[in-house]
Image (cartoon, rainbow, N blue to C red):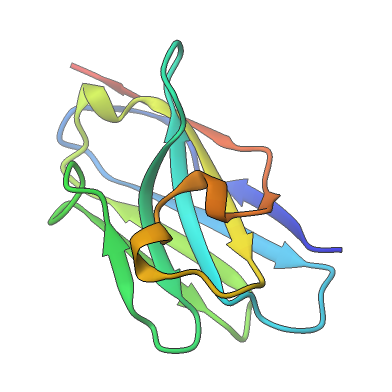
Length: 127
């Protein structure tokens, strides 16, 4: 069974940067696609970024394009999310997710496409 553990969340001021990590374990093959999602209090979970582990193709929500970068280290089985120019509206619990099955690109940052989730790491951005 796949297990995902996020880390790196913190409290920062607007304009600052953070790098989130997601360590994957417990499986014998690399996930087909991995993504980062976030959920703010009272809001639905939204997709932030996704990466197809084989091709390296990446997809981003419009709200984070140019500020966030998703990357992977397959040898370490670790997923990263570099977040720059953070804004107060980026405040949320950030989750890592993995999908072992095929996901069409239109579903890459859709939460319903993913079956395996981490517990989340909190990011708080103050103005």
